[in-house]
Length: 304
Image 1: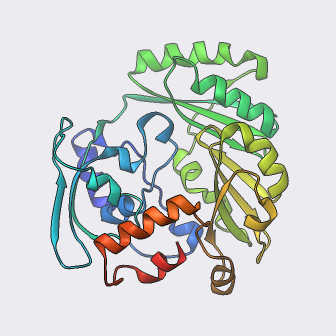
Image 2: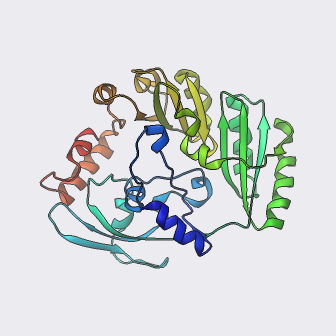
């Protein structure tokens, strides 16, 4: 269980830097998130902007492919150059290439202090510009999110207490063109990570991956209730049930994944966006190599 791994790490003053989300409230499910599930889905949170995704934390893995062969890839140290990087290939494959048995992950120390700066009253374009300025600064911002409904932008800094205090003040000064940034005590970054405030609201939830510079135009087309994360590189969008958001966006430049919907909508629209022809060909070849009989998560493999 992921909770057990995180508890053991916290007791040692460490953490999973990629900040895996807990989407049970959003999905209305009650299962137990696991470390293998987090790696298999490349589940990553706001800290990806500075620490990378789950894939970037994978040092090694042992998995069983579709022929029943146990494969060990990578190692347990950072300086590892043995063979192809199959371990990271497993991250985000959703179990279509193999069943994970072991993973070795890089962990990082827990921060001594965390601070959040709050910028109110920004529309999406200004918020993306402010977040870009913060992420492009030397102040090591570890989270950049925007609530488009409330017009609130939040920026997180972590580290040693004295450093966080210094960097917070200097970042606030850097953000002056977008308004007066104030520290917000008790900002709930787990809720931001999980899009938790959308959970009790009716409708379908889509997750968009896009270039931050294109976020204002894409979200203007999307409509609905919108939450931005990763400086505008990820967006959560709540729309009425049955909305084909992927069709609405067309070629606007966002990859749209259907996260929450009723079974009929999921069957009609598909959870995953279609891959580009070259990527789809490469993915199909990989699946044939690792799972020639098509027994590993076949429904997902067919959808992808």
